[in-house]
Image (cartoon, rainbow, N blue to C red; front, side, top):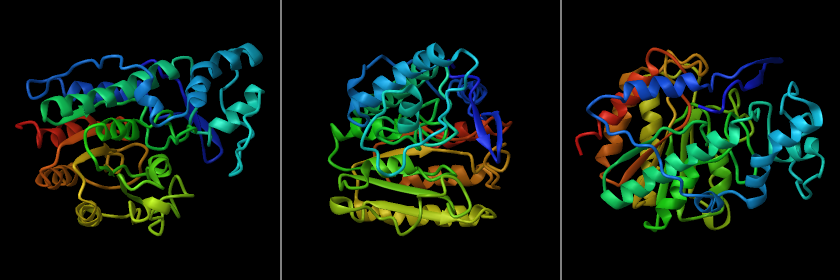
Length: 331
């Protein structure tokens, strides 16, 4: 809840981010009944985060807000005006340069509480993974801020720490092969970049065609991994006017990739921003389609955790997440 008041640049206008505390409150309210047991995560420290993110990046996230306001005042938005390109060989000492090095777009404004919230969000993911390993039961991490656009050393797209990747690395301490299955309406480009050259973690994302949709520059179907990771990255793209049938067909294609990979455990990156009522996603999928995805996921019979990604505040947000989880709640 401490990451609040963030803005982002949309079509040339700096507007309030839909990634607000309200979305977490809506989900939490829908899960506050006898079907679910809610616990606060323990503080597992920085070690699980450092399996994914560099120490320098974590230090940047902890310090940049105070550095920025010291240099430019409380009214100065912590957003980059010069962003690093592909060649990122040197971290500038200037806070302006450092911000452009570590922040990849204008949709990841850092606020006073961003580090505290991001750290707590990542602890939710670690806690869910450890709970599932200890008990064999499925677990859900209500992560906010979300994480799947964050790379190993780059924030973007409302994301600062990659919760799904952190959870997958935690599961790798127990399981030889883990699949991250991402059903957010946007490609999990950060997750893809983290594991792109690895063969022990499958990254499988279904999302709106990036030729017309964020993040635009990655998430295409010909991106299949590199080096040892060749074949361990799968993207399935659908059109902006996709219906439930097309959405489920996309998930069927992800299923083929997961079955070929034969993982021992699953991290479902649960973005529900393709939902018809979502104020940000602009797509038309019904809650029933997400419930069917959950039913198919359960049929795999694999140890599973859920990590919340996108999905913005609407009357259907919390109830849809609750319906998805109830598919697993009788285990």
